[in-house]
Image (cartoon, rainbow, N blue to C red; front, top):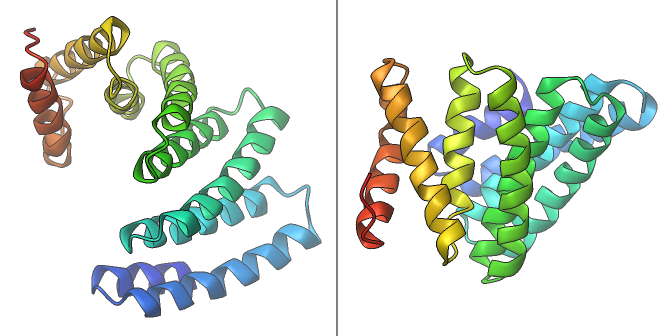
Length: 200
């Protein structure tokens, strides 16, 4: 079992310190591999994932500053990989997710302007992926989430994005492409629509 999986197990048990230690052990190993062979994209991606795991843990523990630092390191790697191989959709999706995570932690820190910028960067990528492969449910789901995140501000643009999210989600529901795990997305979207007095 890898240190990351051990960390995941500890985190699921609510043992934050033990999870952090396992993630940091994984990070040390992956940093060595990535430094030894910097042209190995898989080693670079593994390192990015390790930073994400650490960022997720710190964010769950309420340590937003540390989470931001970890997410920014992951984002830097995701940007390099996406630029090196722009046609690799998995690299583009990783980059979209990284922007989303950075946006979330900036929101936690009360920096709504930076959060909004990151959400829009994530959305731009999610829209490209969803339009390029409309049959991919995961891309459509990513797009819905990105639209919801990018609608957290005020104004007509924010409301328009929220209504677009509802349109995509309804289409997925009609095509029986929603999973039980998507229920929180449905609830959040419904609540946001009600709060803004929007009907769809």
